Length: 165
Image (cartoon, rainbow, N blue to C red; front, side, top):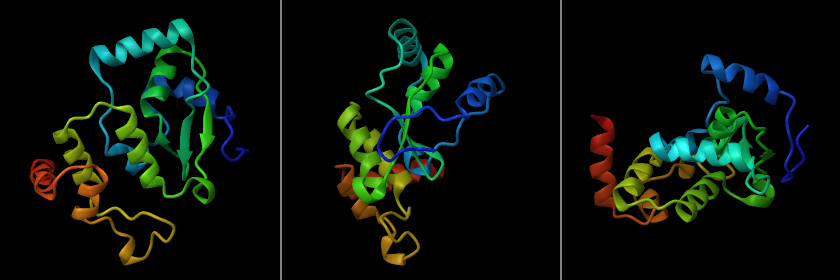
């Protein structure tokens, strides 16, 4: 069983490592899916670095609702490098809104340009967030998505057009 906020290695990790060969991975949380994956040469370099240095336990894969909330690239690289990833559960009671967490982690850690942030905002638009995720007022509107990702509403609208076509 997971311990709140503390890294752990779940029992199913070995199964996940075996299943990666057949293309099966842990599901990614929809909030995380708003942000692009590392691909190509950048991902290959990440895998090689992980093979050489191992997995940094200080950066665990964060799970929420049984899905990867943060750390998709770390998990993919760990599986590709055949090293054991470290996991922890996200605790909304102590860490707050999971959407705020994902946005903060990705904006703070990545070098995303304005168009990438606008696309992420467009993907997040309409999601429910916060503690009461069934209430209509908990939906993320375009203005809020734009503000959270530090882009204009107009940029989000253009990104939404691209997303929809």
